[in-house]
Image (cartoon, helix red, strand yellow):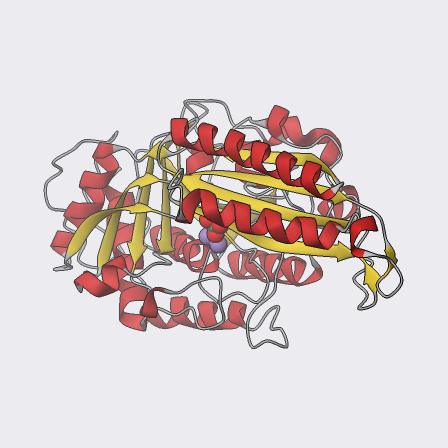
Length: 432
Ligand code: HGY
Ligand code: MN
Ligand code: MN
């Protein structure tokens, strides 16, 4: 396919209409790949469990590399485990050529849907393949990327791969382990990464002309408005704390109530305290304890220890800072009242970020050309884009989520919207 696309160099707001009569998304190929990846990591709950660096994640990564090779593209894995896919080069790529990075993540939360992350990666692969097949030349070299461990579901370091790419190595744990204490070193090596060489995964600032991410909205806004395309203007800030509560195990039948240091009872009060800071005190937009483990987790034994995760979100960095301090204070007070100890063992913070106005304009223009109603909206979910924002202008495109749900097996988007999103991604890539 030859394309007479007249791509523009740099990112220019108010870009005129593109003429790309033939370079189009291959609908069957994209939808077929989405279904093929949806079969990897199927779990007993009818969803998909493909936590970062798990066996199922390795299977999905291997399939992505096979698909890339079959499309005569060139996949590689960096030291952080990110999968990068490039077009085959006739000769050495010009050293001063910037990259147009397009991607998302393949890993999922537990019992997830089939689109969060994978849709953006497979759309990026499709766009790269269309550009390669049509011989379309762009001012910047398009590279597709599948970021490693965006969710942090098994190894609790969300945005692992994008933090490495953006150079935020100092914020990564020195000895990353999963929730059971298994070190990351081995699983990362099996994925093609190298914990001792993370520095080589860092991209220099200015090396990326722009980053584009296509993603499902994961909320109800577009569906309620009947809008087909979301132009993301800001991505929420997020603080995730891992908290250990230590009390004393004991016999549930013989230990008097006033002689207990019950870690489960303390943790339960902590869960309520976290909910209160958002629901009653409105200190942040949302607050969630999504994971709670107790030990020994036995019906007739008082829990001696518990571990919970606290997820706080807001678009205002000052409110996020304040609510984190309030939560730390509240949990310490509860520990004092229950005779337990509380330890904040890990904290991951991602700042709220704005997308680039020129990329928002390019996305909106592309949607208009395709006759797609679009609107601007913020993202309540976190994304790798907010890490890449450290080194490049970012743009995010949303498509509607049916029922506004995500991180559940019922997560879904219509085939028409999936294809529209990919077409807007292609046109936006041609404009950058
Ligand atoms: O949790 C989130 O916001 C995203 O799914 N990583
Ligand atoms: Mn997610
Ligand atoms: Mn996601």
